[in-house]
Image (cartoon, rainbow, N blue to C red; front, side, top):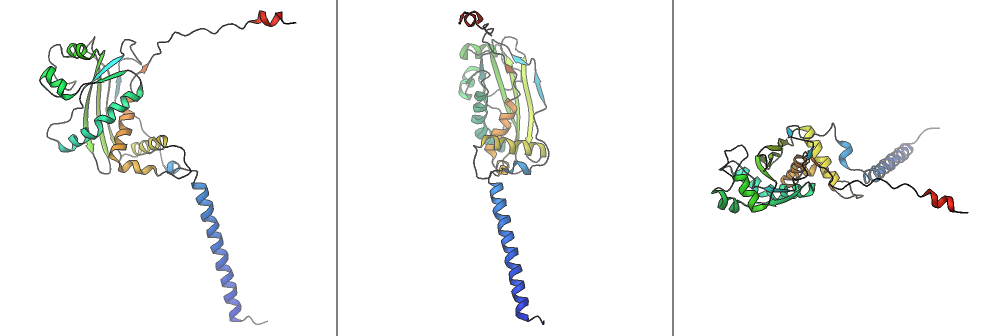
Length: 256
């Protein structure tokens, strides 16, 4: 039998329809499968954690219960760092409170100026005589946290640098310090920031694009502060451990 031109058109039309149905079903499958997935699965490589950390001990001393947090320092006449200070100082305070390692007392720049004649001090500077004792008298603190914002870039790739030092009032020595730069252009830091965002998001059926944190200076700053303060030594529980009570087997034996 001779095949007519119309027959070819019918075959091609049926083939095209089948292809369209296959593509449509693939789209539905991808939509359903992705609706329960985050973009975390599309990351390549591990995340990062701060490396430049010092601890005098693995646990905070039981008596280190209150910490005076000094104003966040920045390099003078640096407009970018000053903008970072205004944006991230409240973030640092919030992350310190979240750790529940100790009670924090925030010392304002004006309070520090009244006490010492200056609005900010760094741990590496020569401090005034009885500086720590003065702060202890005013705030009742057991330690003082010196903080400095060393780097800040508010456009991609985002960069935040923290230099934090916890000084024991009693010994005037550094008990904990972290000096770290978080650069979103670094792939492990990039991954760690995206994982942090996903962990903060509530469970949802809508896919979360974890890359949004790489374009948000405040969110990325929150991530960096969280990672920095997470390196603080742990707080040893002050609750006495009660040994488990033996089972009352006698009562069981008395049952008929």
